[in-house]
Image 1: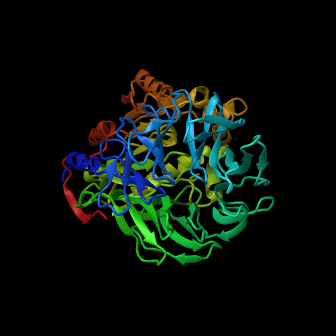
Image 2: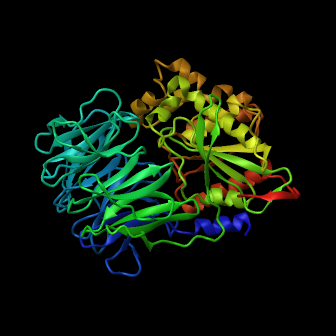
Image 3: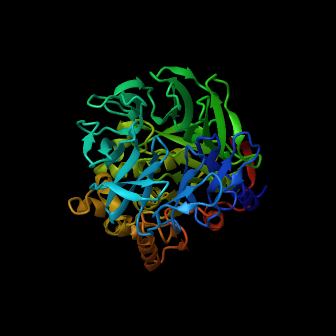
Amino acid sequence: MNAPSLLERLLATPAASLPSHAGDGRLYFLQDSGGSAQVWELAAGASAPRQRTAHADAVSFVAGLPDGGAIFGRDGAGDERHQLYHLPPEGEARPLTADPRTIHDWGAVSPDGARIAFTANRRDPAHSDAWVIELATGEARCVAERQGPHELQGWSADGAALLLATAPRTFEATLLRVALSGGAVTELTPHDGDARHLNPRARADGGGFWLLTDRGRAFLAVAFLREGGAPALLYAPEADVEKLEPSPDQRHLAVVVNEGGYSRLRLLDAAGAVIAEPGHPAGVITRLSWSPDGQKVVFDLARFSAPSSLYAAGLDGAAALLVHGATPPEGLRHWRTLAFPSFDGRRVPTFLALPDGPVPREGWPMLVWVHGGPAMQALPNWRPDLQAILAQGIGVLVPNVRGSTGYGTGYAALDDREKRLDSVADLAAAHAWLGEQPDVDGTRIGIMGQSYGGWMVLAATTEYPELWACGIDFYGIANWHSFFRNTGPWRIDHRAAEYGHPVRDAALLRRLSPLHQAARIRCPLLVAQGLTDPRVPPSESEQIVEALQAKRIAVQYLTFADEGHGFTKRHNRRAVYEAVMRFLDAHLKARGAAPGPGRGS
């Protein structure tokens, strides 16, 4: 199958994600069959799901309610000003919020199901306050005004308080208890130094919380916290525990462990002992949801070779069963997991996929794809664009350069502030390693990334201009000073803690801004940008494009008026992916190369 027709089939293969049970047993989830993610519902005992929403813009989450209904949220054209909606068990949804200037970030449903809690920056764009809405009346009230951004993580067991998390830096998160009556705030997790306290889940008897924490550790672990005490570790593997959900009767805990980027489901008892390790395909799990009877947990799982589908696993430890999902085209490629050496001898974990078929005499051209963040991890996720690029005859390397999460807090700190360019040096090391591989053409290696990964593309092509055959920058930062000036005000302090303060660290940020070295770029660039992006505003892409045009460096610029920080609508993904493939065909892929010995793997 040729790459363009494969891309169309891949884009038309729907993904089902973010499952959430309602109290009557029906399962809500998101599916993008119509071109953007919408709410779907699978009733208990039903053989097929039904669609419950049909908006042009994607739905961002759905949460089941005890009465069989649900709450969901969506923004306008990717602007991230999410509004909340109540979907009854039958009938149309009604809006709970209607202020397009405000970000309403989802939180949790109260223990009795009568209220929901969330954060909103209505008072001031830079600060998120705690809010509660009574579902029966739609009455909304601000419970507590807070300084800076916060996330609403849950409720106390008695429904009399909210659990907030504040995260001034990437690897610090403190839990706060906020009383609904009077708004008194109690810090639940006082600590020295960086430590994360995440995902609190209240025990029904009010005796404390299960949570995830890396206090005193390199990895997140399951712990139990009694108010006034310190977290006591229950389950602490040498890998991040990324998800935690107690069963409705609270006798069991479902957790997801990150093992080299691959998710692994484990079921524990309430004290943290492993009781089951259900088998499931190798991939990435985003959300867990227990059935109301507590006998099974449903989860979504995406693979590099298949879109997200829904699976169910029981307490007996048997292999998970497919609940709902689409069948992708046959013959898609899989990742190999390996590591390559960098400039200081450190091994950089990476994923590699090579095309199928005879190796060209010169070797395969390659694309290095760089994740965003920076405190994120490239995962073996569903990527229709990368599968189509492989079908085009171009290999793909996806490194987790220093600064990536998933390999311990020490590895994640290796790119902090003055060490930022060390992560760019890892990309040069990736290029050098690829050039040594017998099936690779070291003269035809391109680089691609999005968001912070877009900055990495610009940094790589200015710091190491002689290496790259072409570059693709999706909404990347070109100038750190203008980024801080124009990004959403709710993001400034958190991002300054990661990258450097725009005033105190002005010299460092200037050195790290590719715009000031744009004349060093030698290869052609493709730049793509959503015009409603509140995180990396269009001015970043506009500046680098204008600078390249002024220097007569080849650049192509694509914009999307109805997209923000990412391309969520199918017709836009089609347009940008087709442009990428044409760009790679023109600037990376050899034409008419004779086949040589060996095969891709």
